[in-house]
Amino acid sequence: LKGASAVIEKDLIAGLLADGVEADMLIILTGEESVYKNYQTDKQEPIREMTCAQAQTYIAEGEFGEGTMLPKIQAAIDYIGNSAVRSVLIANLEEALDGVSGLKGTLIHK
Image 1 (spheres, rainbow, N blue to C red):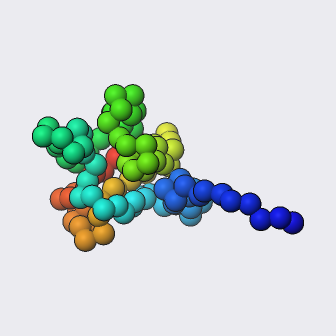
Image 2: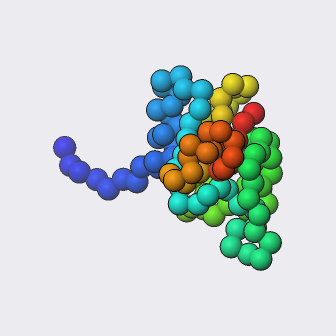
């Protein structure tokens, strides 16, 4: 056997683990309070809730950074799939509890 370098996409793996244990909600922790539209511009605004279809539209519009938020959004869409029950919360650690209550973060659902 010979070792090789590899990159593991942590958000994708988190979604696969949540799927494997049949969780209804996946919480992805990040350094941001929520997902933002027009991130780091004078028009920046939080996205508090979005459907997978809306997320796909934002992806097509280039709203999410490739090395930052995009992998989280893609993992959320993959995890939710066709489930009407599953959801994903993206929030920072300090506000995750408020996120579960719907007060902070971004909730993604079918």
